[in-house]
Image (cartoon, rainbow, N blue to C red; front, side):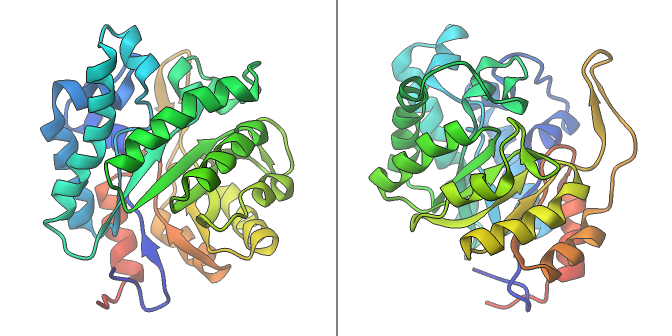
Length: 294
């Protein structure tokens, strides 16, 4: 895989905002996963745009994809399972146009399926057994589809992290593990040092954070490295804020490429963007940090 001269691996940006920029309404509970059924070519187009911008990793459209979620939308179980697996196939087919690039199968939190904002709070009020029953079959569907690695992302709660780490160890598949945070704590309020320690298993190749404020990244990167000794991963939001009442983004975004220099200096190895970070931002990050090596 191509890397920057300093070892940096460029990730992609947000899938949903890139699809919305292409004219898609993602306001239903399935979010971007709806297009796995309705318009998979558009998902492929976004993966291609990120690769063309310089991303070395495409993250699949499976963040919000679950059998339960599809069934609630009227999709039968067999078709739901096929759609989840198709997220990897779509990304792999595009990846094959770009030798040396990778596909990471996205595994979002239980709260993403609830589509009620609890993915940003954690503390779902369910047992670990419920979380295991939800995540286990989906992980197996994605792994069997053959991604290069799993992207466990936007996890708000250490309880959920413990379940996912156990499953990764049992299934023995490489993954990165990324929390959603607020300051120096998970969204559910646990100290980051404790949360990062949970993910320090052999199957996890990188530990860090995503879907957070850019200002929260530096401390998290330093903490992840000091606790786990593993490469750090960071892909925050643009810096804008979501107005849930007005249903719009407010404020000004931050230039990812500028801040990334500080994160890389602190030891971040995998860097990209999440909500409101698009192909142009990844292109700028690539231009600033990448001297291609094969």
